[in-house]
Image (cartoon, rainbow, N blue to C red; front, top):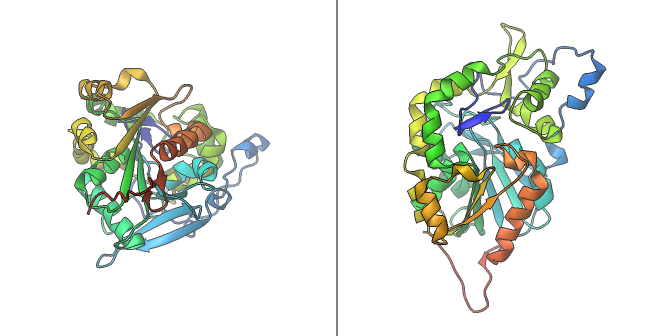
Length: 345
């Protein structure tokens, strides 16, 4: 599933987990334990407002679910970002800063992650996650949404594919999947619990958690870790330390559903598609054939780990903006003179 960023294991090999407690809330987290080491200053948390323009709480009508959403930019199509298991919407912070002059970036905290609060935070079934995303987009944009490009990383990539395949999002014009392939993900499931249990479980301070995420975890970009890691943690008062906000080890019954049949579903989505991979050895048979038939664009991103959007945000942003430009996706859809192209109803 994934390796393991402090806030999450890379889902293609395992995902992060945390102990159960209340949902993360900045206001609810006690003051961080004092840190006296000057060496930890370079791992001090950074605020989301340096990267996004707005943080919004989206309440889903008829439910008790309230999702946290980060937004940046005011023009162009909407790049709607879905993070991987154990991460948060802030996984896309640095990339959002790069893209917001040419696109509207929306990055949500999925159920059981970040600052989102739902009636059942442990229900990470693909059906529930898919329904959540569709409900959020409808709540935010109504029946006349702007042009949307769905972007999903690892587990979030699977959610993005399922959302697109449902054909319920009007004006959906693109699908971007980041470093998740069915074959590799399914093969890694048997190792996931071991991967989760072998990572660092408790941290005396947020700074130490950030330090671990880049020294022993899956992230390679210190700045991105300083923005994203805090929202993947919660404070355990009984132990006087920080641990993971998302208890992925408790969601094992849903893991298979995230990835089973993903390749064929991805290939069947009737929108422009791009698959960003951190390595060429991850294509399974279905995707290899589909790529040879020109059913999607594949880009191998070098010198990065599983979290491509965090490790190399400038290059990632460039790929997204080039995808938008190449497919002529404007704020309201494909911009071709004399042609109005709408997809999905």
